[in-house]
Length: 159
Image (cartoon, rainbow, N blue to C red; front, side, top):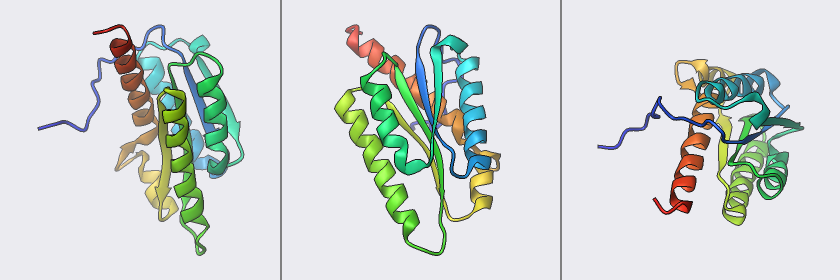
């Protein structure tokens, strides 16, 4: 049976990561960022190997992810945001197009682009995912980025 947990012994020493963070719903996204940074640091990533930039909302994440993935030599790009359902269909457009855009960038660039965007029905569900009952999705995003960067590095070296 396959585990859905991360190997706590991931070593990301020497790897470079970019983090794109949405300012919209910043009370959640800044907690996602804290968790991602903590996860990267615990895996041995030095501060000089982490670049963080903010965008207005989740809609803008794919563009910054593309700039990161095709520009500087990052081993992975982590995208963090929170799209919380409201009374209009706006949620469906933003969440779906953000996900589609990030997947497109990942495939186009050949660089891991991690979808660390919460898509919840309400603020309580979002809070439960930034250190609450459902773990910390910011940290999970960092672990996914590390795991994918290490996998691609191993495959590129022929191992």
